[in-house]
Image (cartoon, rainbow, N blue to C red; front, side, top):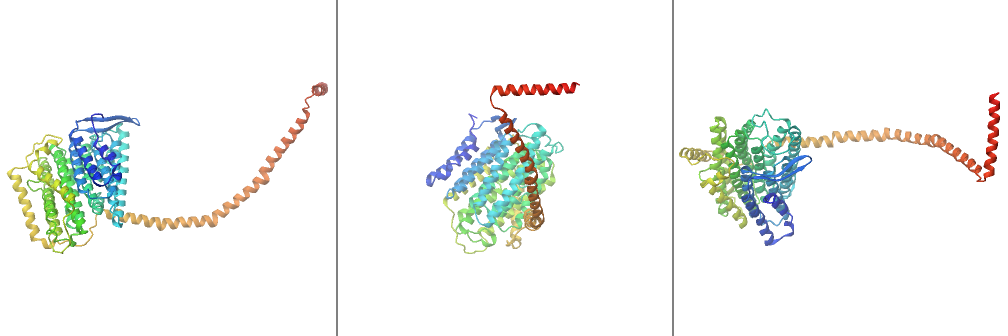
Length: 591
């Protein structure tokens, strides 16, 4: 790896000095490492790096191609933006966790074998969980624990799949799984790997960990979490399972599922989390379609999504930071004191809504166009409906009730300057990609034969968005947020955990106590009596016999020892007596 600098190592090893730095030195250092990582990605050449053998298997630490470079590029850019956003933090632990999180995500992106991938995969889970625990408080601790348990379970499933796949194929190299294009050719291990991947992608019904944990994370931690976990899952699915038909329908369901649940949400970050589920659905569907345009659309939409979703979480985080509130029914009227935050948030809202000249327009439409080119009318219809719902809730409902709405006379101000700068960086990129999409298209895995700015496409998009805005105005009265909790699939493992604890604390504990009581009152006295009887038998019987034999042997040995005088004449006399006795016995026996 002499001509290759792994950006994952820059972050993971770079996390070590952070606790020992402070002030301006720490801030400069936090910006230096992501900058160096961006330069390292820009300098990369396609190829394989770090080949070795371990436990009889070929290991490939890094495999670089166009697909890995496009994800690594946006990951390192997002790391820099996220660090700018978090510069005001004095908590070194959050900075360390963020560095390890980003480094682990980059390790997954470049992993050339499943063992390397798995190690970094688990590193992501533990590092990101800390960003939830760091918020402290009961809700955050419980959400972080559930988040960690779900991802540990997913990791075990993934590890089982990796072992099974390795035994079946004889190789642990990471690439397109044979049979993924037809599904029928996949083995048990391949399906387990797929299950581990789609759990991290938050595919329903395995999505509740995302909407449960992200709203409870720290203000800056949620920004990082919105960018990496689900998008590394998109990457590995694009690498291993392109063209898998199941993913088309899972992705389509995701796109609608997230939008429907966003209707019910009152927590601003939970609403945004549901739209992560929805937007990742476009990417999963594109990977499932599997054509060059569809995979390009999935990769480009992941690139754009990381930036605009981070911008949205940064905007919501800025509101939480200055007001201490995150429920829409408790917010409103702060647009007067936070105009910059409002303007920057709306850039992200227009980008996720696929407005022309914003990043989502040139990426999301590629996936929809790929579905149309593959003659999937139902998928096109569902994704178009989801796009309308996204604008309704993220572009209209959330900013209206968060910034405008009822004037509650909240004490608010613009957030720290570094937070505004980070939001500005993301906003500039959202606009730049929308206006000049060709640099992003040039990064994509396949040649791009797609033109987003056609007259019909622009008019169709604007018509859909304006119709959605009209519906928002007409039915605003029905969209008022309510202070309620929406039940999601996390209900099952929340209730399941309670049932397990009840089982452990009640029936099982009582059974254990009953067995212990029986043991103490009946079994133990019997065993003790048997032990005492055995001891008596041992002392009076076995030990007496053994001691008697030993005493006899010692007594006989003493007598024999007296016969050994050491005088030669005595021995000669004894021999003569013995010889006479033997002769007498022989004569008597002969007669």
